[in-house]
Length: 260
Image (cartoon, rainbow, N blue to C red; front, side):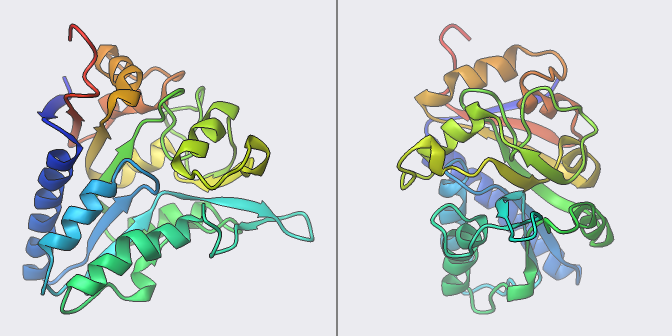
């Protein structure tokens, strides 16, 4: 049975998760090793990232690695896929720089080196899993559930549990959810239709701890699907949490389904 932790609201959830991560960062520093944190872009972990910056003021985090889950990709002139522009409002590279590494580095005495912000390479997706494995794995992977289809990173419904890092055609439901995540999209036609993403198997194989965070009234369906599932259900990818080691589900009161 996957452990469930409940919090009054998004802020308290984020603060508690940041406290856990900071303890891991401190322990890794004391042990003379890197701390690899698996990070989603978008809304779900914002309160955690903000609390991390507050809790790491004056710290040395030169050993911290920020391993992003995914990024949008676009077609190059030769037909291959490449990262979307780094300054695009929906770019995960931009998100990592402005909403994770930037605030941490402003707070810390020694910040995260530029080469410690990692993303999967659309030119060689499988190399990302090899890189994470060579680093000793991910100490803690933060994951979230899509509101309407349970997507994790860009992993869409129906994806196998052992899926690896790959270029993924995005489900319409995922692209629709992403319009709320990135409100500068004017229409669904502006949302890229492919991304490079870790797979469910990637997260399961490289992670020591996994935290699925679900908060807000808009995620009640997501929470219900995950909490009612007894095992992995391919049509709701976030249920893979029941097959992860070191797994916990963290949710706030607003996301808790009625009667549960």
